[in-house]
Length: 237
Ligand code: ADP
Ligand code: UDP
Image (cartoon, rainbow, N blue to C red; front, side, top):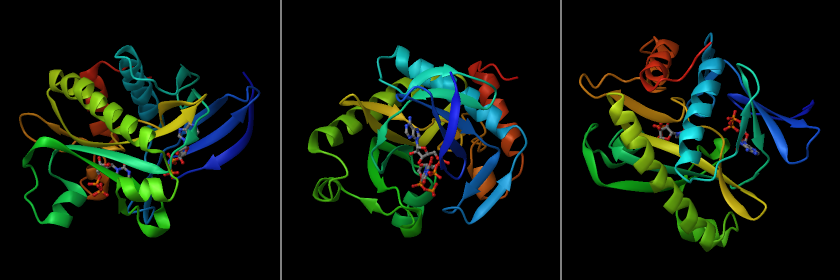
């Protein structure tokens, strides 16, 4: 496997081409960003923790029958993944009210949501990732009706698998964001599942153990990610 030129440098990861046209390398950097890239910091070891965390979670999802980008772990900070044609929308499921939902609807943080909610957001930093619905997604050709249905089904399937995985580790999966892409005509889970893109609270104390520590300046960001990884049994280096 040969690492070739840089394809894209995002806010937290860099994507490289390889000698295999169907594979990419995702490099997880220590950069941590919030508020659409307005707040950026380097946090030691975050790339390694997130890379290994993501590999662990995607392996569990694959075992549960969810198609993922996963190929293999390459190093502390790099994973080999299937090259996907990314769909430019983010799929968010919420089990508990927090974040933008609380701000948008004026509801109380921490309220359990029954049923869990589903939202689509357009991936566009300049527009601050506006919420969109299925009509927008179809009308602008970001995904087909069938892909929209599959994204919803798979995102909820991920919820069933991960809610119980985190519960067993004494954690509440508050909400999370997924991104999908297409590979050989199949819808596949891409990007990452790490504490950068979900909310995790300690089940007893409700302490925040995710990127809200960075957003809210609470400190101990990577320490919290390590704590979650350790409770799940993720092997860190
Ligand atoms: P952002 O683009 O939001 O700043 P990142 O720093 O995480 O985010 O950059 C990673 C980029 O790589 C994202 O744009 C994501 O959509 C894209 N990506 C993630 N997984 C894959 C994949 N398997 N194939 C192709 N592109 C991917
Ligand atoms: N999220 C993400 N990337 C985004 C927007 C949201 O990973 O660009 C995640 C976020 O970490 C949280 C969930 O999606 O776990 C819901 O985020 P929310 O809409 O509450 O927005 P926030 O207040 O986090 O910006």
